[in-house]
Amino acid sequence: VELPEAKQAIDRAIDAQQTLVIVGDCSVKYHGRAASKIADGERLVIIKSDRSMLVHQNKNMAAINYQPPRGEITTALDGHGLAVRSSRDKPRELLEVIFKKVFFAQAFALRDDNSLRVFGTEKNLADLLMQDLDKVEPGLAALKQESPHISGSIDIFARDSKGRNVIIEVKRRTAGLKEVSQLKRYVEEVSQRLDRKARGILVAPKITPHALSVLEKQGLEFAALDFEVSNPSAKIRGVKPKQKALGEFLA
Amino acid sequence: VELPEAKQAIDRAIDAQQTLVIVGDCSVKYHGRAASKIADGERLVIIKSDRSMLVHQNKNMAAINYQPPRGEITTALDGHGLAVRSSRDKPRELLEVIFKKVFFAQAFALRDDNSLRVFGTEKNLADLLMQDLDKVEPGLAALKQESPHISGSIDIFARDSKGRNVIIEVKRRTAGLKEVSQLKRYVEEVSQRLDRKARGILVAPKITPHALSVLEKQGLEFAALDFEVSNPSAKIRGVKPKQKALGEFLA
DNA sequence: GCTGGGAGAGGCTTA
DNA sequence: TAAGCCTTTCCCAGC
Image 1 (cartoon, each protein chain N blue to C red):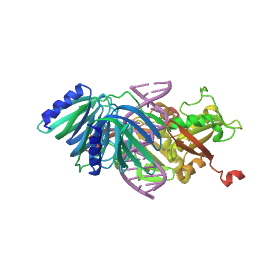
Image 2: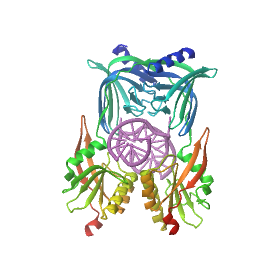
Image 3: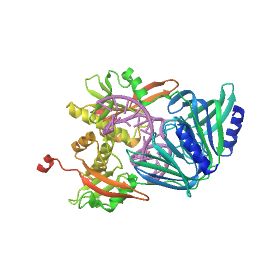
Image 4: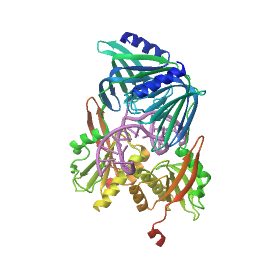
């Protein structure tokens, strides 16, 4: 495709708010929250109908450069090639693709009224766990969310058979140090607000060795979550509290 | 494009390890770490030469479904339409796109020998800061960068003019609760292991009010990082320690 | 608009 | 391979 033709096709597509697919030899520069640069290469550039823009290489899932929806898109043709730019304010960012050659450029009016439904998310699992907290520990009772003390982002707030507050953080994948810190932050905040030490239980499929050791040192607990995803819902097969260490039994 | 033709084009492209762009009316199902489903709609499907696969709607930057590189890709044509599937083991995952119609399908042999260079990353900033730790606080001496510990890897480990250990965590954007927790985790481990209270300084452009109050309550510090990104490198304009609260002066 | 937090996060680096 | 962690994270839900 000759560059002037390509420019016209691109301008028309953007004007018509269509989704545009361009394949060509280009260099890319970005400047904004960070800055980046890549020399010439054959790449796939996508401009969607919401004016989001993507630059893909021929490998990896992630785009190497991008610009979010609602940017201002302009094109310009000069001796260096065909420039396609997307800019926005707040933050000020500019993505510039300069095509030396365009092999393909076509617009599509993609009609799509449906949206993705996902099952087996963390929220999904937390909801299921709420229905049957005994699986985590017999006698555990979910508390009403209405308590104004409780930070909204705690997955499950409960009370154990001895009347202690219990904070449960649910994770859909292997928990690491980050998740332990997160639980600890919640436990500290609630303990302080209610002026009473709360328990914290991390419920996840697995936990890394270091995270487990840090967690135990903090007096927090881990319970292994066994779940399966299916369509259209997830199912919890079981929850197995970690065996108490010998020392804890003696204490 | 008729479906049998499309199937041939797709099979050929995959065999030739080219990058394939397909536009069509399709439904998508995914089952693996989670599960998802979306009914018919016109979408853009990309299969790259490394066999990574992407399903894009006409809006938002993120793909709604995807499969990482090196999956096994198969096609099948029957009464329901043209199925394109990508599956992999570890973890076992299947992505299935069923096209009712294919508007466009073409393969491209994208030649690209270059890779992206990014400036203004956190690593970049930490490197610059290491060169001139005095900017954070006069008399600060760097001991180690990216030093691994049980509780995680510390960006910069240093010693202040009074011989105290200082842990510095650098962030390229506004710091929140997560970042405070991260720093706290490092400080606690080092303090405990060396049996001597370490200082912790969070260096970031900004910090959220709540995070700042939590940080101060933990006895940690914040320093505002003023940097600018450029091509081909970032530059630190300055670092301004937060004014000590009145109480700290008195103490 | 800011803040917090999940995501099928992806992707990189180091042990 | 596993673990940790950054990312122009994106994206969404609350406030």
